[in-house]
Structure formats: C-alpha cells, structure tokens
Length: 467
Image (cartoon, helix red, strand yellow):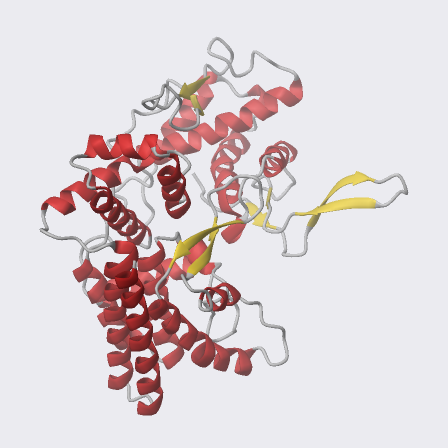
C-alpha cells in the first residue's frame, strides 16, 4: 500500500463554526491542529472528515501535531487508499474486502528492510479497530443498522473489557469498549519496557558534552533529562512545561510544580501538581535566566515570550514532542547504548521509585497487602492517581511488582519524594556543571550556580529532617 499521508493539520488560528447566535453572528470554537483528510487524488473526503469531526467533538486530543486525532486520520488513511484503489464506496465495502484489507496490512514489508514486516500485529489491530469505528460512522450517517454487525455485511462486533472489582465490589476502573473482527490477528504477548536504569541515565548525561555544540543546547539537554527523571512526565507534557510554573514553584515553602496532563479527554489542557526539590528548581531557573533568555533576546527580538521552557536555539520557538524523542535517541546513540532507550522509560522509573517510597512508608509486607492498602485508602489513592496521572489503579499493578522486586534487592531504600530524589538529582546537576567546566564556561558563573544548588540541597535535606 502506498503510505503517503492523506491528512493535513489546520493552522494555529483555525476555528470551526458552532452555531449562529440570535443576533446573526457566527460562533466558532478553536480547532487548531485538527486533521483534514482527503482521498488519494486530493479530493475532500466527507465521510472521513465527519468521523474526525465527531471524535473532535468528543474531546480527542489534538496536541503535539494532532494528537490522537492525527493517529486516527493516519489509521483510516490506510482504508481510504484501499477503497480508492478498488473504486469502492465505504458503504459498499464487503466483509470479504475488509478481510483482504487486514491481510494487506499484515503482509506489507518494511520499505528499508524487506526482511521485516512494516507493522506488528498490535498495530494492525489498532488500525483495524479505528477503521471499524469509521465504517460505523458511515453506517450511522446512511441509517444502515445492518452494515457493521455480527451478522451484517461486515461481521464485526463491539466488545467490552470490564475491570476487576476492588475489595468493596466497586469497579477499579472504567469499562473499555472496542471493535473486534474475526480477521484480526491474535495479539502478540505485550513486550513491556523496563524502567531506565541509573547507569543508562549516567551514560546519557555523559553524551551531552560530546554531542552539544553550544552552551544552550548542552544545558537544555541536561534540563530535559532532569525533568524526565524527577517528574515521570510524558514527552508531550515535558514540551508544555511553562517558565511561569517553574518560577511559581520556586517561591513556595514546599515546592510543587504544575505539570500539564495530556491523557485526559475533553479537549482542554489539564494540570496536576508534583513535588520537586529546591535544587532541581535552582537548576531550571539557571537555564531560564541565562541560556534561554539569551536565545530569546537574539532570535525573537521584540516578540512576546511564548512562555514555554524548552526552546529551539535557532528560532526561539518551543520544542515539540518529536524533537524531544529525537534528542534522547541521539544521546543514546552517542553513548553507545545498545538496548532500547526512549523518553517513556523515565516514566516507568519514576512510577517504580514512587511505589518503592510508598511501600517503605506504609511498611507493606507484600504486593497484595499494598494493593489492598491502595484500594482501601481514599486519600492515598487520590494522591497516587494525581502524581502518576492514572485514572485506573489496575494499570499500575506492574509497578507495584517492580517496586517489591527492587526492595528485595536493597537493604534500605531512601524516600523518593524526599531524600532520594534530591540527592540523585543533585548528582545530575554536578555532572552538568562538570561538563560546563570541561567546556570552559566562565568559572564565576559556574561557582554561582553551584553555590545556589548546594544551598537548595541543604534546604531540601533540612526539610526532611524537620519532617
């Protein structure tokens, strides 16, 4: 199948009409980064855009270059190319043709390595489910209840996955509904990524000095790794951290950093509060007040500051999520790291360390005892959901097991939210400053930054002692 992308994204100023008010004025709603999809010959695709509009109105994400809406557009693009090649209208698709479509998705080879499949079975299933959702939208528009149905022209069905009840008999998470078709392959065993290790993080930090060309690039990369390590945030959330939130956290007695949350429906950006050490904030502030300020002064002139923390040195514009992923890959390659390294592995590490801290604090003897504590303790449950950004506690099970594995390997585990994270992060700050010394930055500036970081660490440790 020709894999040329069939959708484009609307501009940052684009708005969709919503309704006409009583005075005749047209009311609109922001619709930036909304995918607009076309047939392979470039003509507008009404059915595809109606499906995407419905998903937009349900609150699907558009952040980071279209978000989940862009993923849906890419998925149905495969089906549109299949339909176009056979001159078949979506409403006329047969079950046999849908099976053929799924078969083509499975057998397609990777363009740069024909010995490998282009996509694994999990990806095929994800594309197939989105396409069934699109065909169901087509059927609704045509008033055809028998088009997609277990006994219909396309023999698919909607299934439900209900979470196990908690100890009080209540659902431990939301019901998940999904489309299924007999042509879908059986899901392969899920390969879960393990948390990134401390030695791997140290290698990534070590590669910053040899790959960075300027002081700004070098410091920004250290800031990026630090944010991943101490917040457990997703790459898109790291890209949306604001300068104002860093500065606001630095002036309160028990610092809490406001972090954006991307995995919530509704189309509106939401936030959660995460504890952060003073030494980390001191390091972030140094980047804001020196390297970032210098770039904005040179590249943006009199333009207003957009307020986002991580910026492109050549333009002064905010970094996007894909660039952050590329930065991590570049560092991993330069460090000679053979195993898979990606930003989300920092999140796995953060969640595991968080559960280590909670298990130690509550002296849970085993995983089952801790799960019961987590489910029964409303205050603890709310705090864990806020810090981890997980609505369904069942999805955190694997981190509980990993945490008990880690506890079994150590006699004493420091409290992540207090002592451990402050010390680990301060060591990262020291490594960054050692790198600055090797690059012959101004000694007075380095000494000033180190003095601030040491004082911030003292304050962090003193607050632990008082607690």
